[in-house]
Amino acid sequence: QFNSMIVVIKKIWLLIQAYVFPIYCVCCDVEGKWVCESCFNNIDIKGYFACPICGVKNNDGLSCCKSSIKKHISITKYDEKKIIEKIIYLLKYEHVDLISLEITKIIKQFYNLDRSIFNEIDVIVPISLSKKRFKERGFNQAEVIANCLSNVIDIDVFNYLDRTKHTKQQAKLTALERVLNVKGAFTCNTNINDQTVLLVDDVYTSGATMQAGSKALYKSGAKKVVGFSLARAEMRNK
Image 1 (cartoon, helix red, strand yellow):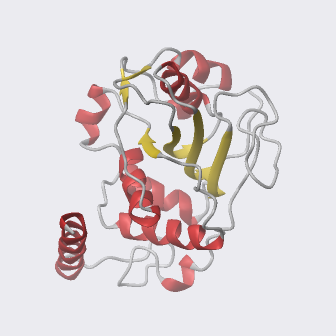
Image 2: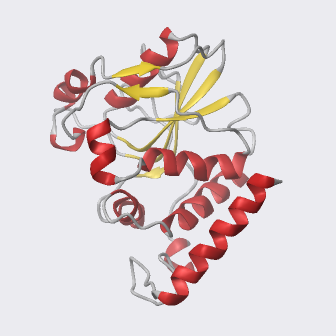
Image 3: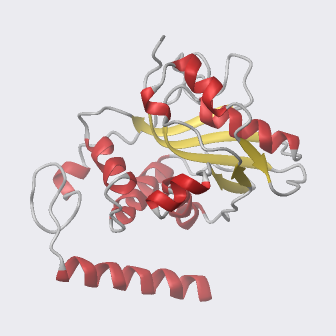
């Protein structure tokens, strides 16, 4: 009941912010929402499923290769020219709190397509940031997404991962450099006790960050690690 009250208070505060500081659609500049209804309906939220390692598309996201991420769930394909990229950019770099309402709406519509998709999940764990990056940004975008997801599917979020070293930004690196960049970057701060973990990040590209995070979770007793991201980019062979 207390958590429900907090959610209501947050929604009221966000609405007050929207009234005092008018917002405009990131796509068409219509006033009123970060994503207007017309543009929202253009987001493909049927799910983007592919092997976490080789990127071969399938119907469920299960791995056909050796992988510590046994399955990856993504809501849509990542495209730098599409609305989802603009939403993630606003969250990650512009620090727009209100965009979490749109993210929750996206997740809810995706979840309503198949409510069994998260049945095996026991806990939600966001990919962690280094202390330096968290200080720079002031928040963890993966944790924001994890909390949006938690509000929809009613599974608790736990910050089980610690980032033990500051790494370069993955977006600027090749696939091999990404693997080396995050190797040994995570530790798990608790015993997970044979639970199935949903590991959350904003965008899944090479999968190097999730693979590194999942290995730390397995070392602490995870039964299975499933990946989740708002969007997934097509694999680049570089």
